[in-house]
Structure formats: structure tokens, C-alpha cells
Amino acid sequence: MHKLSPQELEIAQLIITTLGLEDIQASDIDPQEPLFNEGLGLDSIDALELALAISKKYGFQLRSDDDKNAQIFSSLRALSEHIENNRS
Image (cartoon, rainbow, N blue to C red; front, side, top):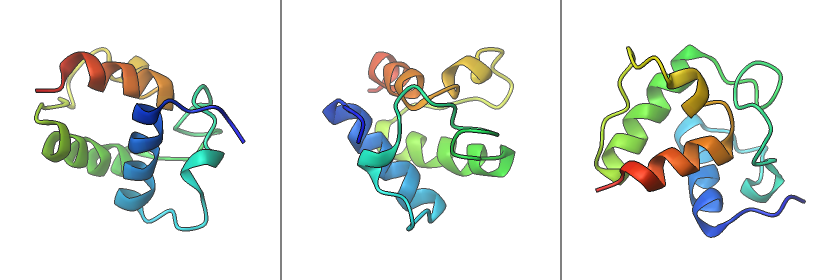
């Protein structure tokens, strides 16, 4: 089990719910592990679904043409920090 902040745990649960990852527990996600490819194995369609869910829940847009997307979505921790810094 990995030590997740309350914010990271909330976002991990959002990822699981949004993407239908019922076989994963939020607390099992390593906050520094990659979300895409080798980590959780998410793909570009998952990123779009997740961006929409984040937009609805946290009140700001994640743009598909943002040059920082690779860094923003690099891990649960990076995504959590970006949301915390941009939520309305």
C-alpha cells in the first residue's frame, strides 16, 4: 500500500470510477508511478475521459493541445498537484 494524500486518494478514486477500473483499489495506486503505458496502462482515450471528469469535478479545463500534458498526466502525484493549483 502506498501513502496517498487525501487529494491523491480522491483523484485516484475519480480515475477508477471514470475509467471503470473496478479491479484496482485507490490505495493501491503508487502516486509516483506513470499513469500511462507501463504504470496503470492508460491510453489517449482514457486521458480524454479523465480530462472531462476533472473539468466537471474541479471546474477548469485540461486542454488537449497543452504542451505540459505529458508532465501533468505523468503520475497521480503530478496530476494532483496540477489540479490543486488550478481548481476553482
